[in-house]
Amino acid sequence: MMMITAAAMLTMTLSTAIMVLTTLISKKSNEDREKSSPFECGFDPKNSARLPFSSRFFLIAVIFMIFDVEIALLLPMPVTMMTSNMKSWMTVSIMFLLILIIGLYHEWNQGSLEWSE
Image (tube, rainbow, N blue to C red; front, side, top):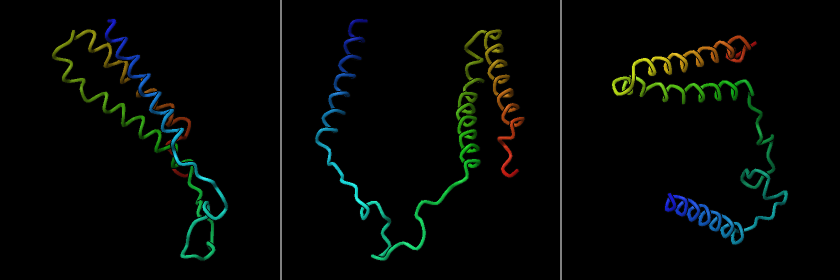
């Protein structure tokens, strides 16, 4: 136990020291109008380089990522069924799926899954 604690402390100390060192010796950039403007062959840009995006698209992408991670958690369930107690496996599986279904219903009920209104 003492070796694990010492290794964890050494790792945290070493990573903190590296982060501080790289911050101190990193190249500082001075921002000015010319450097932050988009470059179009030496001409002034015709329109803004910052295009707005749909926050609805961002919300749907985040929901997709959440459910994608949960699918990755569902995949090992059949493998663990053979090595665990059937009652506890069934309880955990049903609770996990129930939470997923309730979350999906909530998102659907709130209208977050509708692309256009």
